[in-house]
Amino acid sequence: MDRGSPGWGRLLEPIRAQRESAGLFLDFDGTLAEIARRPEAALPIPGVVPLLEELASSYALVAVLSGRPNREIRRLVPSRRVEMLGLYGMVDAGGSRSSVQTIVPAVREVADRVLGAFVEDKGSAIAVHYRGAPDAAAAERRLAPALRELADRSHMGLLSGKMVLELLPLDAPGKGGALLREVVAHDLTGCLFAGDDIADLDAFRAMNRLRDGRVDGVRVAVRSPETPAQLCAAADLVVDGPEGLLELLGALR
Image (cartoon, rainbow, N blue to C red):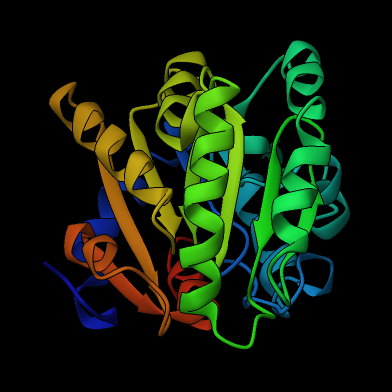
């Protein structure tokens, strides 16, 4: 398993060599941007948007695959060449939005009981952030059971992330499902995915299936103090933060 730039070439070369049929899939928060105290404060690191634009001119597909809504990703990554796969790849969010909106008041009620927690209404998903809580571990212990009960009662899924708990429809494809869908749709023969959180393990597992189907795949973990150990253990490459990923992406030119 390669862990730094000296070993990048061996794993990246198959992706570079078939760029006309290869796709790059990248998470946003913690991957292209440093984690911020509140979602609206996050910004892509300097230099990454022009680099994505450049890569999108030569690779079959460059996409941001994120839990954020498409409109937010488009605002943060204003490139017409880069595709936006928001809300974990959900395509038709009309019915999903309706079902999620019925539980927004109940989710807000749960969040209001925990100091420092706040709700992010994404339309077709709803997240409760607790990064601002005085004791994040205690906040999670209070939030998780109540949100799990609400999710079960509403026939929804509950996704855990970096100091966030998110309710979303059970039929949401997840990052793995979205990745597989796009690889098939674009007839890709090579694929790189980079992420930093527990939800990104789903994309890593999808990459295993793609490899079985003879698609060249590279799994990149973007490491920070909050990155789950299991993500780094499952990765082919581990880079240090968004700056490390920027360097790796530069090597794909």
